[in-house]
Length: 459
Image (cartoon, rainbow, N blue to C red; front, top):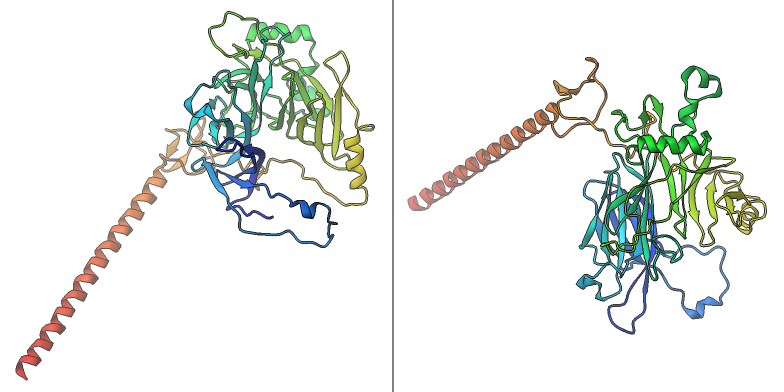
């Protein structure tokens, strides 16, 4: 079955819709988010049992049939960049609507926000995750069972976590129960050329992971987990202090909530950040068993990749799969037993070996990145940000000079106002002209009618 969307799909998720009556069966659906900002659910086609044993026809074409679809929600005048469907935590959700088994759908867009709605009753909004200053480039979410043996763990506890990456360069960890941020990975700067490292002094900024653990901990004490690079951004969201930001293009949560995995644009490696255990607070008034305050995610292990990583995912056994460019395509990293360190096991991984064997005689060219850019090298998801008061004669002007900078129209742009004013004048003129024509036509009709009446009276 082939489903058509109004706009190109940007993200997908598989989920089940619970039956409305007891004894019913779950309905598997595909939820697609497109570039018009809509999330649409499509039923997953089922294969009849009679066809299960039939042989596949190599020349068979995909069947396109009209099927039921449902518009779940929309982000007005925006684009969906990510979505996840996760079960609710029944320990904290006591709403009347939760009498039936309910889920949550998290939708991210280019307008720096993540909306949390109930699924399939998507008209009920639980809240928003707010804090990023640029488009959301990647997202992952899960309800993870808390470890009773860990500090803060409890029997039957759950940890609803969401991880997001953004064009502002940060990766943020959220508690989507309370809609609060609980941790952040700071900005990573793209490495400079080796020949320019000494001249530009980029080496220290390029790889914070090279610092010793003691040095990082001292910096964390001085700066604090809440002050990481948040206040020093320039107007250009793709740069920090004159250097290029490595924008996260894929993020993943470990199935056991022990690590966050991040792949960044233009960086041939992935970073694995351990998530600290929740603090022990048995007497907490809140029913949440999550991290109750911001925690540091500075510590990391950097795993080099032979090519640009395009996507990352975590397995239930704690291992990490990385989709990469040719010729490797799929990389597999396994956690070493008894440690938090990961090692490269692609050479013996069944997944990697099977994929390489399947495409051995095929010519496949993977994209350089999953973040699209325009002709000027800017991210297409990046909005043109112009601040109030930056306009002179309808042009955005830099604060340090009179040179106008290229920018899209702003809601308070004088040029846009003038254009709207002229359009309104044209509409009014058209209405006046139409009224005049109607008046002339009616007068002419009256003249013709009176002439006909005069002729009839004379006869």
